[in-house]
Length: 194
Image 1 (tube, rainbow, N blue to C red):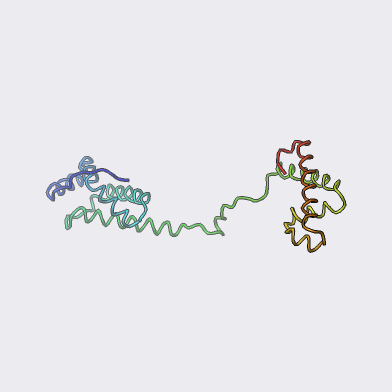
Image 2 (image 1 turned 60 degrees about the vertical axis):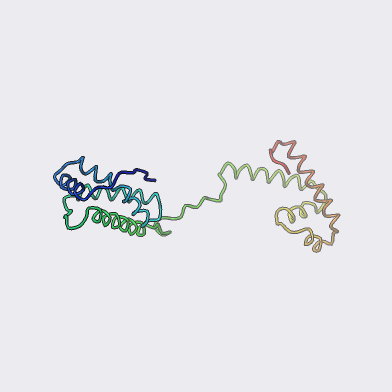
């Protein structure tokens, strides 16, 4: 945010500084910009409604003043001319940014891949093979029940309705299967809790 506070220039002082700046006096031009910088920033902020963009617009407008000070005609106050430069700079910047909106055909959106890294995929496959082998050692049908519950995500009520097993029986079988996997996990040092 711009916090400089410099006293406003009197009309005669401003005209003198403008004449000197147009004659190549860099100190006079710097004094003019310092005197109007806060006003320029607040106008840019009013147009852009964004403090960061307002600072950028103020800087760009200052460069325009540096380049075009010789084009100023003393038909109006310097501050009016300066205000017009700030507004035009803000509008041009807005148009430029509006045209540069990336489109999916030109710039594909940066989407993070949901695919695991190859090393992670290999480890996951190995763990699944070990878990599948451990589940295969369970009582008949427990492997299928475990997969339906924890891989397919079916509810206990649905599995009970489809298999005809009671809820307490299902819970007991799932508990034993999880305990078996937990023991295998601890023995193998898989590093995650089941």
